[in-house]
Image 1 (cartoon, rainbow, N blue to C red):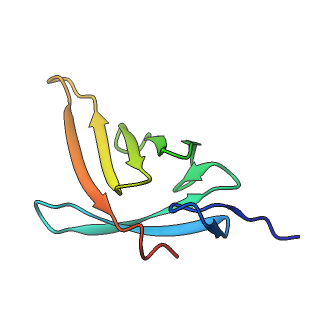
Image 2 (cartoon, rainbow, N blue to C red; image 1 turned 180 degrees about the vertical axis):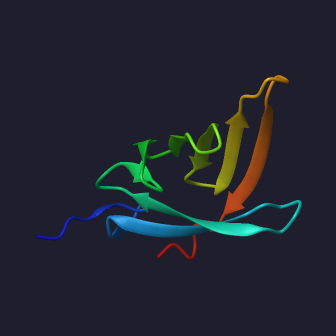
Length: 96
């Protein structure tokens, strides 16, 4: 039995969605996989609300937040020098 969930824009979609995110400074891009049914991003536990998706990536120590309306991706990373923030944009229009 298939399961539909709320899409990034409010429409129905499959459980897994791949989003392409881009660093606005360097132009580097990468993909993240959101599993709405399993509540994960790239296999890491996530909190998924109508407004945002947030998760912690233990590989880089980043706390991520994706705004589901604008596509703005913010990361806060702790470090011994006080930490830093990163920003990117995820293309919600071409989610697959």
